Amino acid sequence: MTFVRLDSAEGEVIDGAVIDGAVTRPERPRGRPRRRPLGGPRWVGWVFVLPGLIGLVVFIVVPQLASLILGFSDSTVLGGTEFTGWENYARLFRDSQFLNSVLVTAIFVLVYVPANIAISLAMAMWLQTRIAGRNWLRVIFLIPALSPMVANAAVFRLLFQQDGAVNQALAAVGLAPIPWLSDGNWALAVVIGVSLWQSFGYNMIVLGAGLDSISPDVIAASRIDGAGRFRRLFSITLPLVSPALFFTTVLTVIGAWSTFAQAYVITGGGPGNSTMTIMLYLYQTAFSNNQLGYASAIATVLFVIIAIFTLFQLWGQKKWVHYD
Image (cartoon, rainbow, N blue to C red; front, side, top):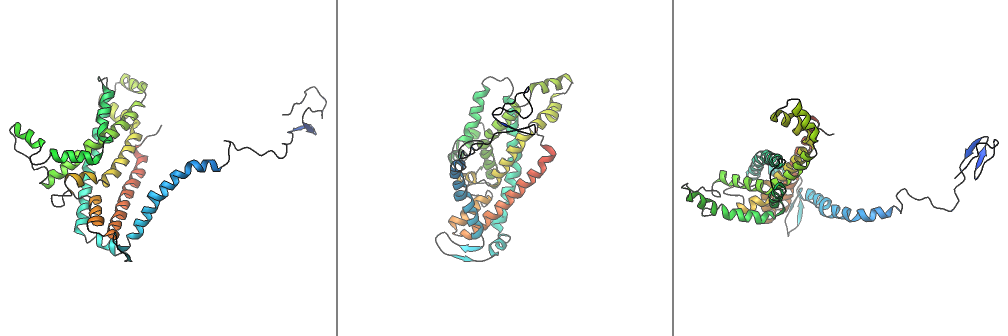
């Protein structure tokens, strides 16, 4: 550190050097290494990051590359691999079962996503009121999202059987039984309903956190200005909670396109192919029909579909998502 006496003559310096009236810093002792801003060598950071990178490469990057390569081949689970070029992708557009699975999954997405977001937002807003035990209600509504999906689907399959508890309850009040799992329309409705029950709790928690971030002063000011309940909802609440809405919508769309366990356990894709989703058809193609190469082509197409929807949502967020 350099000290200069203000009353000293020009050129006088203490613990430093002055050249033509300019004060210069003393030289750093040689041989002392320059310390990094955060301390420690660079490899320390890589030690903490490396396990995550290894997991990313082994369980995500490598399987995706392998699936992409297998999509251009005629491969089986236990057999050899023969390169076939674009034959698998050309076959997809002639495969009526695959086209039906795309249609079924699209219907599932169009019904499930808006219903999930609407129910989650309504429940989150309801729990924002001064209702007794609202914290316990949040926990109760979140339990299905934390429980195993296969176990939940197995329970609902028993409930909606022809002689299950649901039809017995209908018979008790004088109503005719409903073919929940033997009629295509009812079966798809059951799959959608179970999926909603399973997953709306997570979105409810995320949207509730977004609602908690809204300043009470903003709501109070809008009431003073005479804004009604619906005006506050569409002009204040929804714009301020739009980042949370965007986050939940993206995740819900991705999960809807890749739904599998509900259809597999409850209906097995039936009756007929009325609940045959893309993921379920992919599974049957790979492990029941032993067509790993063709299933890899289906997986690639599903990845492209999800990527298109996600990119479309990222592009559209500029028009309706408002960040502080």
